[in-house]
Length: 172
Image (cartoon, rainbow, N blue to C red; front, side):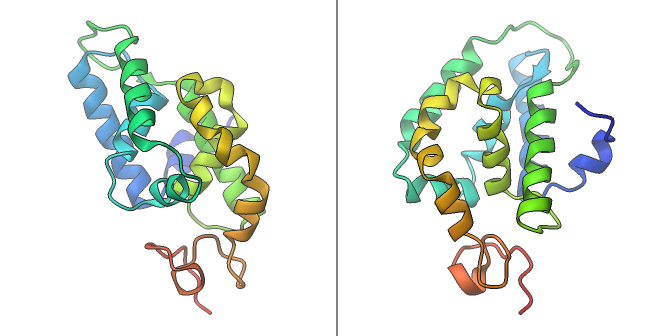
């Protein structure tokens, strides 16, 4: 990760991402894994009822059940037996940093949302091999979709303009 403070960067996560990362940490500890990996976080994000990821997956007809199975398989391959968590994996740091860069610079967002995180993961797919195949339909249309997901007020995922569940702060 760059020299950006983790606390500052992770402070940019929206409430769903932040609480799901906390849940991923608890899940990691429960499983006895030494590092919190992207698979832990994605597993927790998949539990959300109607977050950005679910909306994007539905839009691109991603097989969420198969994705969930692949994430569980990836989790099962992780080392076990740790009595404590050592740290977050660098893959999480890299994905969050990329998400912030895209969210803030490309979309003008003040917080990192699930769509931004997905974009950050996609830009670093080598960090998420167990889920890479599931993102191919998204990647194939990502520029068109992510450009289209920005509302007429230049806010991504705006409830008022695109009908999504959570507003990204469009005040116009």
